[in-house]
Length: 279
Image 1: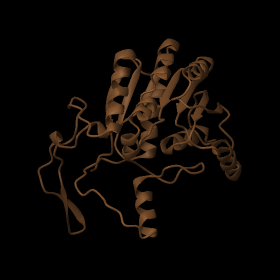
Image 2: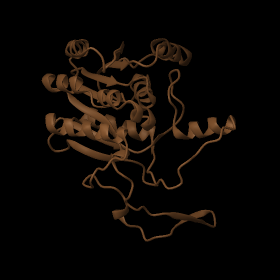
Image 3: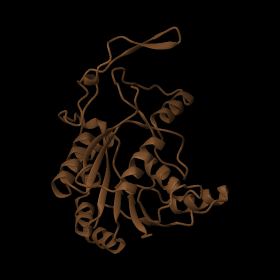
Image 4: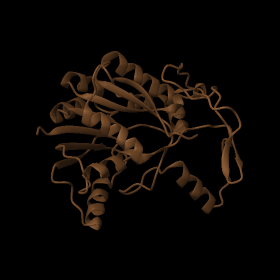
């Protein structure tokens, strides 16, 4: 069986770490042969963290998986980025690297756009014939579409309004981001739709939840943030009018791996809303 070369950007981030750990698990049931190139930039100890984790677990990568960790800044030195990607010759690129904090993106719009929509990377993928699986966000929507609210009745939940699929955002709904972060993801989607229309998918993910990262430190989930604020007794302001379809990190990995294993064609390329069944 031919080895499939997979390039993962943002492998030291929350979803990236869980995806990498899943792929490197010796208990993986996949019969595919993978050669993984995991790119990272923000963590100076990531290589050691990965090595230490597998030593502690007394586990080794599955026999049918080879992997290499590479430190690379996608926003600097276009020639270095281009040369690196061309030498790796990936069959699939999973683009997870991002400035995902709306506040940071708002303060650094150019940097956020450069990382969230890395045109040099995507151009290389097109030239190499590599398929692209890119993580987008539900923040491409302005949130004005009403959702069904629920009230608690006798330890159970009851719909206040009659269930209607029209309350959920559809991929055909107009994208109207209200912040720079959402706009950079729209820019990414549009670039892929224009330049790789039949070989890319953009996954508009809702909030991703799950356990702490397997390797080292990185930004945790919203629930981890809430816990840390409570433990430190820090005064915190929370939104009261958000309705989001949170998704498990493991479900998100399954979605990504479906496209890795089945491939992207003109039949399934495009944009997908990805979230849990409940809001």
